[in-house]
Length: 198
Length: 77
Image (cartoon, rainbow over all chains, first blue to last red; front, side, top):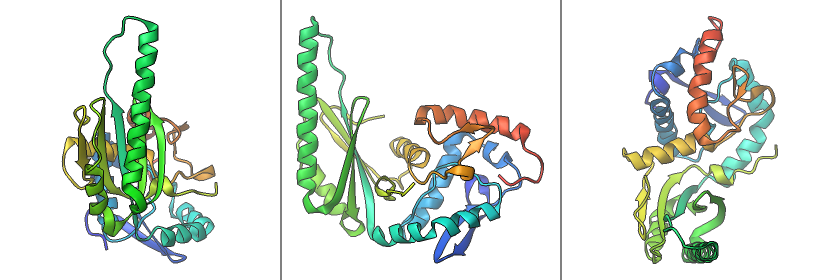
């Protein structure tokens, strides 16, 4: 199921508990995290996740998640395994596609009124475009969430793993306004759709 | 790095390019389970998981260095 080393070449072990398999590295000191730049460690962490995610649905932990010892890990699984199992079953065949829509920089306006008018127009364009994206996704997006970011909007679509290519093809058919740019990335684990009780 | 105005680009998490790295950083640091209570990711008293990506990029490394100096030999990390 998993073959490559973890962060900084650490051995990735797995623990089966209450019907779940959890992957982790056990290290005696924090030196592991200091060996390279953070971006390198993050990339290595990601590669392990991706290898597992390619074959099955996963619930990712954020990087770095550091526990004191194995007992803490086992205790956590005892407490939350039911919830994790339900989520894994529910999202077993799904992945997440991210769409980041960004507004391009506007040119300076002579007056405040002009600025506000342009801003209003730009926001309307953004809303119309994301509505069009969602509409084009249609039933391929089983769920859709979005939130504002500094200069645009970030959308998350829940898509069946086998329909990712079809979903991307549909996104390509949406015409892009010149004031916007969009970046579609995925498939990712369905982290944005995991609604935990606590 | 972002797409040109009026364009849509596609990024694959498995690809080895700068665009993907930005996405990977965002996902690995910003999404996924946050352990709570005693299991909260806490290094040297700094709660790392409730701050934004930009802060994390700085504070994780700083906190890890700080923690490295404080950690007793034999303690799991």
